[in-house]
Image (cartoon, rainbow, N blue to C red):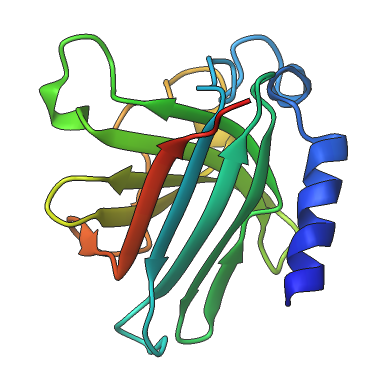
Length: 175
């Protein structure tokens, strides 16, 4: 498993860049936004994945250039999401939105069994002992008409609200 994580990280480092993904989606694409550099997020919701209880593991890091590497594994029953490519990491929300204070957001893509890609958004809240939610949206829905910061159009994989984390560590990565 450790070898797989290293390979996934190296592949992501080679192919992922915020500008490359945004240009693939056209001007104003879903990843057309600033990435917070030098951040590391480790979030775990550990337990036996069942039809009702999900398992969530997030290990993500951004470098000084805003390139994001790492992985998200989400499992619930037979449902599994593995983010293949990260494109954006940011903190907080739109100006004046107090509901997003202390929240780190991650945006990436995964490929479903039928071959279609979708956006995957992970929101991690450091307050209340650490909480997480994982949502998806079709790439065609999130492209040009609506900001990824918008709450509309997302399908929650973690149910309504936020799930408590078993472990959370968010920190700045020093050079």
